[in-house]
Length: 355
Image (cartoon, rainbow, N blue to C red; front, side, top):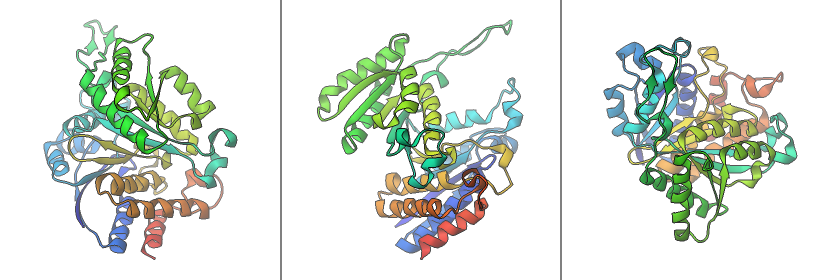
């Protein structure tokens, strides 16, 4: 099989972790007989510095012509620390999601047996956790208009808007995911307070009869935030709006022991995009210490969701598990034990796949 992959390394540690994912993808290609063409493009702060646009048209064209997109991270302190900046890296991320039609962010949370002891939560609470969030990605408060500040600058406002169609397309995907898993779907909202959440709940209730084999539960977002820590094994597939999903998936990532371990996929109407859930971690940029495993596992999701090659995806997941068992890990996981650099971990993973 021949595949075109767009590479968007982005900012901070993005280029370093993407490099390791590429090593692994190439090793998979040699083992299974696939050929890849990689086309790199700029996004985020890097793109602003080069073009003035955090998601240039040229980058969009490369993405649209590709079979899948591997994305690193965006963000830079010079923009984070300047609230008045008119052009920001995050605008590129939102523009990319909107223009590529990436309305569903799929974020799994699972545990690794060899790392259970490194989680901040008790073993008996998290062992066996296997859940997945579907976060609506192209609407809600991040995109709603109007937004802004008063002329005096002492008042600001954002608008949270959802349509029934936007909710329905994500909910249907959630039902379909649940049918292939444990047949449990949780709709996360704040229907006791927010009108948009009441529309979410009403829309999902209307769809229930079409999926009689799926049990549906409805929970307020604050209750889910608590139960994710108390008993994450109670969940299977969770669907939620943009803002709630952004917060809850970062919370869920600590269950595994490190945010540097969790991959994600963004699915929708055009090309599929795959990225680690961690940020650009600018403090580590260029130091060769960042954990590349989330990005490598995102490449595994790419083989599964974009190319329908589950055997190749499993080969990557298996070698990541092996690296954790053998302690071939970066310093964020090693915690005082022997650690390896970002590139050393990538080299080891690629070498193991090639055997």
